[in-house]
Length: 476
Image (tube, rainbow, N blue to C red):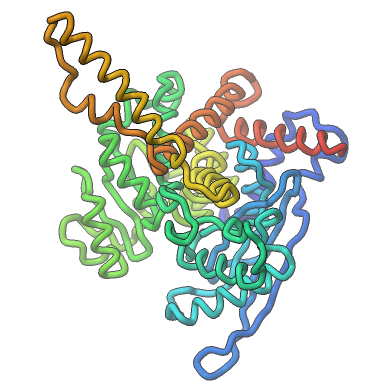
């Protein structure tokens, strides 16, 4: 009975939007303009595979063009449909506004199971899909810029970029038509890890504020916190890896499609990753307990729960049994609106997807800027920075020698100080700064308004206000 009342993903996004705009004073009509999806293109195209023509259905939805280009990933999954793509496009609008990436929101999808096709077949399908979108300017450096999503990776983005370049041979900015490309195909260092790294930075920023941490009933730092990760793809793997290796968190469970692995002492993330890469799942992994009904682990006791796979995994059917005091949404829409309400009433703190998984689009923005500027970050200033630091070190050492004090710089300091930042370090710095600034904007609303009880509403309020101001600046 409870499941029958479960809102769809799109309805959940609308319900969460409604909670926020009810607290705002938007001009008549502007609320509706921000809410609605501007356009959705549906394409049906044929590709000759295995001796016959197979027809595929694809989508590209543009939610808001308050800023252009519009930005959003392309996913390959059997569940892709118009409602899902439009909901994801709306989330992209709000996400870009929250992290101040100068994009509108878009999303794309192709209804297929990529595991059913070999690499050559996927390339043929991807190139034809890219052709259908590009000839309608739904892939374009200044109008619509896709990126990887569930079921796609830098491989598919390289094919799309090449297809666009073949169709636009004189476009000097052709590489900027898509982000998430391989490093040697116009990509940027740190893009593959970006969403998982963003989850880490989001948690770090949250734990910098003891007052916020106390709201979840936790205390201290990330060190020693017991974490459960649901979904061990690109996002879940990198989030688990960084939190365990760099922040001392214990990954006590990993949930995948073929069950879950549990070890209260902490799983070896790299070892699990290698096993999954080789065997296609977690079953049979020797160094942990395997639980066949993996989703039951969503209800397991832990400090931090990270749903990092698909939408709606925490819903009316299981939300009441979720024990984690802190949930960070690494996936898009992993909590339904109904589950969100149940968990908020329990006092659970939820770090919302709009903020938590914005690392991908943030670093995509950096990649787009790199492609348009035609130079990698750090190339102009790195050695000059090192030379300036060398002057200071030389002067300190000269003063020490001349004065006879005899002190010396501590081991390792000189090497670290003299090293200029490369592209990866600059990307991580920019991502860290972005996640901190976005959290501060949410936190200011969360703590500054009596009518805002949670971070999700705070995030919506910040982003919708920015979109509204952008439309008003255009004269709407």
